[in-house]
Amino acid sequence: MLKHLYIKNFTLIDELDISLYDGFSVITGETGAGKSIILGAIGLLLGQRADSKTIKQGADKCIIEAHFNLSRYDMQSFFDDNDIEYDSEDCIIRRELTAAGKSRAFINDTPVALSMLKELGDQLMDVHSQHQNLLLNKQDFQLEVVDIIADDATQLAKYQRTYAEYLKAEKELAEMTLAIERNRENRDFLQFQYDELASANLTAGEQEELEQRSETMEHSEDIKSALYTTDNALSGEQSGVIESLRTTLSALRSIEAVYPEVSELIKRIDSSYIDLKDVGHEISSLLESVDFDPAELDRVNNRLDRIYELEKKYHVETVEDIIAKRDAIYKQLEAIEGGDESLDALKARKQQLEEQARKEADALTKMRTKAAKTIESEMQKRLVPLGMPHVRFSIQRSSVELGTNGADRVSFLFSANTSTPLQPVSQVASGGEIARVMLSLKAMISGAVKLPTIIFDEIDTGVSGKTAEMMAQIMKEMGNHGRQVISITHLPQIAALGSVHYKVEKNETASGTTSKMRQLNDDERVREIAQMLSGSDVSEAAIQNAKALLKN
Image (tube, rainbow, N blue to C red; front, side, top):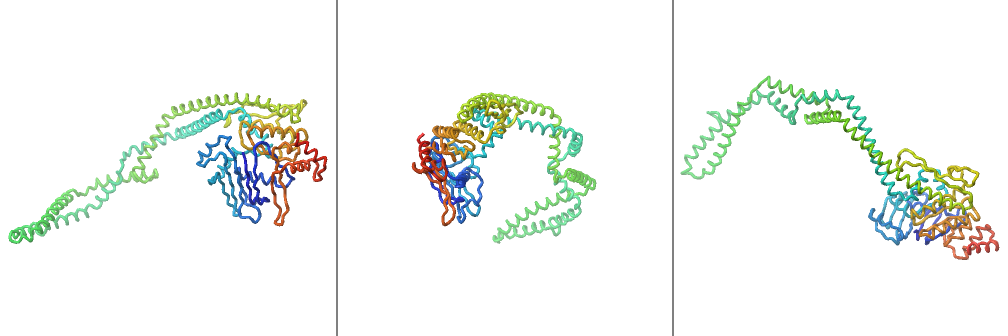
């Protein structure tokens, strides 16, 4: 429940700091006093979009903060799932707006996204304003009411999972059917492409190897000349380096015994001699292997031309890409050959999921049908005391194609008297009748939803007298059953039944117009209700009448 509200620098409010209580409370005040401003501030706490224009003129920042006691509600999982500190007796929601247009939201001093604030707000509070009466026009709202009373959330979630799988299978089936049809149209072309690529007998790395061989053969004379020059320089009988080193070694070894200083030099020259002899042998082998073969060069170049042709034709850059393309086409051909089998399997899965979804939708229908009878009976009991002795309320259910919420469409039918046939409530009910229907629905579903706080904003529009008193009794009864109910009202019959009474009033000050809300004491409450009864001129009779209302 909402136990404390703090508002600073919001439109006409300088600062509001007020405590609230469980049970049934009322808020009164003249039109334009600022009741809608307070609701606007609460709306921001519930995740509504902010406008920097709502900041009080001249202020840099606006703060709206609410404290909730959640000890009677099992809500810890929300905080655990979102890694937010949990305090069941003091949950703090805060919204800050700056004149520069920045908005920040906090839950227990943890910065959160606006969507998370809204998610929590939907679990903490329901604000019923007059425009919400328009919900009676909407099929999804009416079905939601039935689902709440049916307590079918588990079954609905089960159905929705199956229905989502069914939609997925249906989409996959359509895509596969289209793909197979397209592939069959292209089968001959795909087969031609595969045959062309497969007949090339390409291997990975082949292109690089062929390009190197082509380059070598095209420069074979240059290569051979360079190798010959090198071989002659190393192994020539007269002036070859190897023969010179052998002569050098022989000369140094002849003096090694009498001149040991050359021993180390002999070792180094001997090592070079051995290395160069090996190099000479390799050069000689290479010289023998290099041979220009025009036929082989033509074969290599023809093979390369074929590779280049395929790369250009298939818009790829390497042999590996061509191989990948060939394999992909092969898989497409395989899919075409085995397409009917895969298609049949997917058709069977789609049919199985559809049958399962219909089965689970039927279970939903049974729960909703039973709940509809409960709602009809309950609404009859609630509406008769609200000044409609001949009221009839019925829920019409019709079957529709499977959808997100099952296979049901419901329509709330209403007649205020015996002579008028049942028709959709939004089409035949007056404003006052719709207000009473909505209050009865809210009272009925509030226990199932278990919302901590419900605020009614002038739900009494279009009613008066005894009916208003009965509506107040319903709201008071809701407040007596573990929740906080707050009614913003212009009717003294409703104001008199509140356990706590607040007044919103506008004041003219030197700095401009301000709006305040305060809790009334007993004497102030008598005078406020008397003023609601008689107007600005409060008579003694009105005061006595107000006391009688409060006493009753």
